[in-house]
Length: 129
Image (cartoon, rainbow, N blue to C red; front, side, top):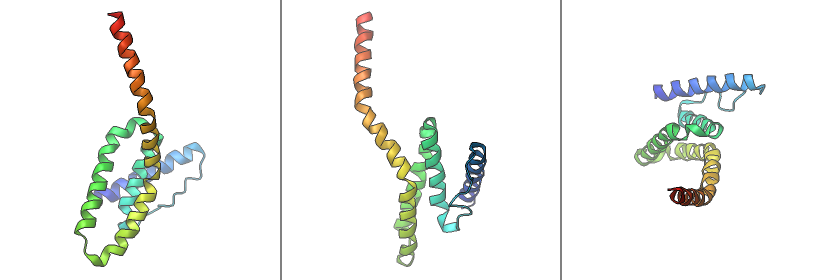
């Protein structure tokens, strides 16, 4: 929990510094997220970084996979009394994952064109041999 909290604080500070440098207001909705909201806040920061810099997809993809796996494990092992909190966290997490979903959809739409291009380049390469 301390690692997640420290990571969220670091990412918030970096995002705030970037926003000030870009001339934005620098305010974040997350602010100091409550302990239960640290995971959605962390996921929100990771998704924003992936959307901003596409080269970070592979390194941050590991974080996304692990955060989602940990969230799923916690949902399965949590008692029924905390199901309301888990549902609220799940809605928050889904909202934070919207930009990642859009990014992935764009990438999936480009795949057929890239495969055709790769095939054409392979044909050209074979002709030159």
